[in-house]
Image 1 (cartoon, rainbow, N blue to C red):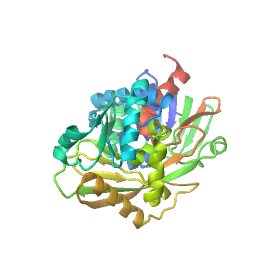
Image 2 (image 1 turned 135 degrees about the vertical axis):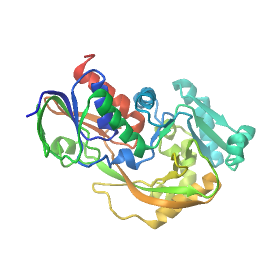
Image 3 (image 1 turned 60 degrees about the horizontal axis):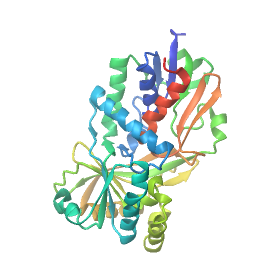
Image 4 (image 1 turned 30 degrees about the vertical axis):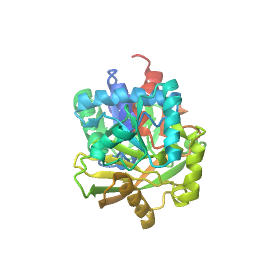
Length: 377
């Protein structure tokens, strides 16, 4: 048994690292366990978009705003690259434009979303007219974007180097019980234990997690190179996202958008496709995604789904792209709420996201959890 720890965390994805930061900056002794040599789950497989604009009013919006500030701290402290210039959501149809206009005139003002709607000359000026084939563009000024494959390792390095967090990689945690973690690196004692196991619902705390009746969401993802010198510096979305994101989906105008999708492109609805594009520091683009839900993610990708996403991306960008990499994204989904913080036993907890917005709200969610467990400390 090693020396005493205040907090033991299982999982080095964004939720685990966020809890580690919140605790270590309070001066607490923290250890993090990760089964792989480097994090390989949702935190590095998805887009690296930390979106404020898409979050529904209330708790999720406030968590996203608070997380935005924490990401800003990490950018300075850990030296990770963070684009803080917002994201553009393009309206391709009249129905989508009307939805964005209604959002800006109503909900955005009422709930403090920092947005602007670009039309006409302002839209034509964007990237030298590259996107002028759209009807309008909603600029979410608070949205951020990072390259997760570099940002997550940079955050780990900072936590280890500057805040004294101990990491155990390539280490499987076999079991947890109050005050103790049993792992392939030995047994460790700690005042509090938090399991941040992503979409793995069967290794640790399987019984209490099973009561949530969770599913896993599988995504088809691409990395591509634009065949023009695009130099994209913003994350991009289209009006398809309006029927998926809570900031827009329950507005009356969203019904017309959804009806048009079902009427004209039902395959996009059936495959859960709504286009997101994130630029990488190397000038490439992360493109996705589709959504398929089940208890076990299928390992088999459909080429047709990739083709549809590439077609959407090329329509949105106004240029051809060449795919250089394909993979599956994955995250936990379909819970009773956007996330859960369970107490399975005294001092033993699970922190779980049930949507794909861990990057957007995870840092502030972890701050709140650590405050509950340890107080001001």
